[in-house]
Image (cartoon, rainbow, N blue to C red):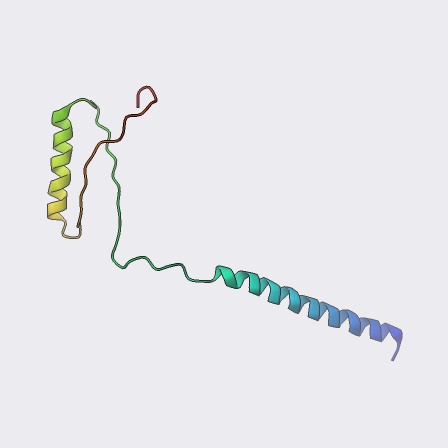
Length: 95
């Protein structure tokens, strides 16, 4: 067998082995990413709605929004909890 043939066989072997090692290494790294995330409790969805009033100090308008939210919660059977509140004061001017 000539040295050229031996060299070609060696290159093929190293290429195939190197490719296999590379493939196995990549597979090993990606296997950690393939783990399933923790399942979310079935049927649970949390939704946050934010509303800005055109007249922030208008208590009557605020009460209308609160009443509408409670009415929606009564009409939609899937709504299990409703909370209404005001944001904490902002140190920024205008909001």
